[in-house]
Length: 102
View (cartoon, rainbow, N blue to C red):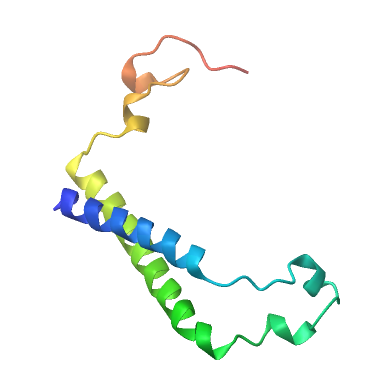
């Protein structure tokens, strides 16, 4: 179950990156926020990009949910992670004898 969810999560990651790169830029950047150019451009989105906005929102929600479920499954199944195997400077659970700084 964990590996299937991890594969779906990686797919969401790739799709989020691609869909964001495909979106057209607003063009104004910070100058549009400070009064330069068309000030209504911040609140009015072109109708052609509505599909891209909905797709981005859907993929972001999917990314969030798969991240949440991977965290829950990882905690309950005791999946080994990089941060769990790193003892750090002081880890009493790992039997480290280095005292904490300060």
